[in-house]
Length: 193
Image: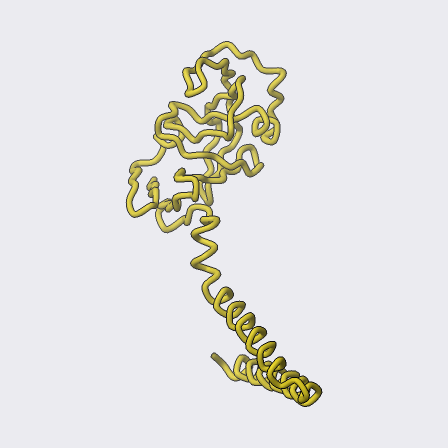
């Protein structure tokens, strides 16, 4: 804490003391009720301070951050609250959120995400078929101009657009195979190039 921070804290404490003191003076007839209200407001104040101090830990549990990109192309992805690992990749320059799915053989876009990436799903030829948890669905092969994850940008990446209903786009093995190492440890998925 530097001198500026100390000055701000001191100012804040003095301001609270002045407000509390003026309130006590103005309501001396009902000191019992005033003390009760002061205790309630004091507990609220302490609760807000505690929540602000613990916010980093709470936020990571409620909404885990995007994968942390480290040195040498190492990416650490925290497990989401739903038990899955999620990454947001830039597909043709647009951010799209993916569920990492090692059981999926391909990078698969929903029709909505394909539109976001500049691909018109209605103009595609759905000539392929894929077996999914929802049964057999039609798929269309596409080539993505760019797929970006942090500083790593891959060009001309093959992918599929799902012709059926999907909750979210899948980051499957055709893209994950570009990494030299995939490890799951301590509720983190680690990808290394």
